[in-house]
Amino acid sequence: MKKLTLTYLSTALALLSTTAMAKNPLFEDVFTADPAALVHEDRVYLYTGHDQAPNNDRFFEMHDWLAFSSTDMVNWQRHGAIMKATDFKWAKGDAWASHMVEKDGTFYFYTTVRHKDNKPGFAIGVATSESPTGPFKDALGHALITNDMTTHTDNDWDDIDPAIHIEDNGDAYMFFGNLVPKYVKLKDNMLELDGDIKVIDIPNFTEALWVHKKDDNYYLSYACEFPEKICYAMSKSIHGPWQYKGILNEIAGNSETNHQSIIEYRGQSYFIYHTGAVPPKNGKPSGGRFRRSVAIDPLFYNDDGSLKRVIMTTEGVSAVK
Image (tube, rainbow, N blue to C red; front, side):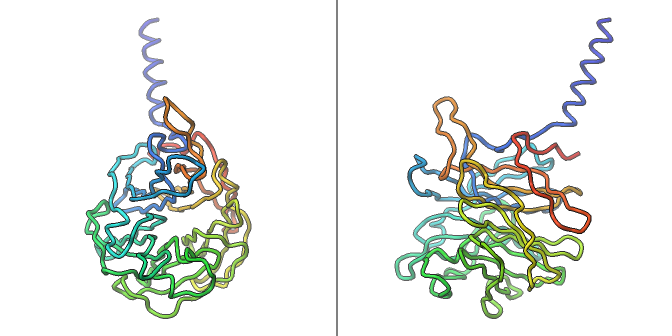
């Protein structure tokens, strides 16, 4: 009987280990926000902002960007801070949303920072490295996009949240903006604009553009309205027109903002986002509007190519085999 019991216990433990689940949020000891994920050499790299506001009644306080990586979407290796906002010498701070892409062996880190006073407002910079975890250095010595390059709104934060999409033929496009969604083609060197900045026609746009492609469909997801949901549109071309398809993800409780990243890894699609759901624990502060945390749930497609509504969970995703 003892041998049978031990065999049963071993089998049960083996089953539990093969169906390991993550938890949402992913990390409870550090506040993470604005996720951007990259699949490279069969590994997922997750880049996040780093909320450090002492209280949830103050504004965002963000000084650097963090990196994590995983081969099963459940266990994450921490790589620490890969850059500070002030590593861009022309910036005075505010490490807002970012996006990492790789092209021809170089990793390009596009990100939002606040420009110094000679060019006030938020700007987009780009840093490069030969490794997905750095070290990264300012590739230009100046901003790629400055606030004075667009005049669509009076906001000085209307050029934020860069997201890069690289076509199969190597053409690269940067999507960005707040209140007015915009995109622009990049030159082959990924460091210069190749043409005019264009406005995208989609409803209820707030911020956080993200483009991904599956089969012959392009998907443009974004934070819509306020408090923010995630909405999406579809097209057969990177240039649109975009057909609005509705809400993809509801308000992410205890956070007025949301910011999504969508990837496919080992045959499964994932929706990565942030909430304010970290509870107070052992005297540590709770999450909230200015202390957000990244979470992951599965993403599924309907037969017609449209996206199923993402259901936020506390259990998270299963470990990838």
